[in-house]
Image (tube, rainbow, N blue to C red; front, side, top):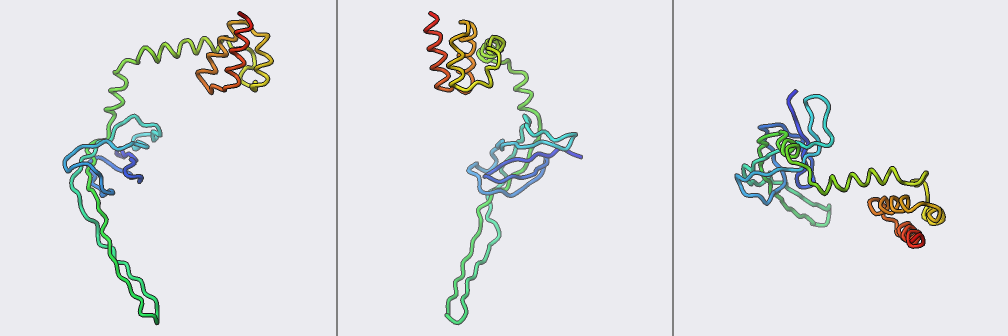
Length: 181
């Protein structure tokens, strides 16, 4: 089975394969330009990937008008008759490639220092958190914070700032730190 992808274009989802041509709602891209639609799923070779890093590349072939749709309204015995028509504006695209070009670039690029620096203290802070901290409400946290050490208070404060940032919890922890100084 060859690789396929499910892409999102113009609020609609399409299942595509390499070399396939399809009509989609009119895109603002010019004829001959290349675009990368949002990829929702990649499958075909093994299990489908629901969080794909692969890129799908499509080329705009032409802008076209769809088939004419005729609409007729009629009410009996009143002489009421209305006729209208409509032709959708469409774009024909060709899927050039379904590949892992974006994933290879992301893997080759080194991770920024700031992201690594943020992750390491967070792991240390998790270890220094007081017992049962995750299940405490703001009121319980304010009461219990008075008995914690300075290291535990700082770890809890850092955890709150990195996570939910509950205003009451931040205020209670900052107040407890002020009292210890």
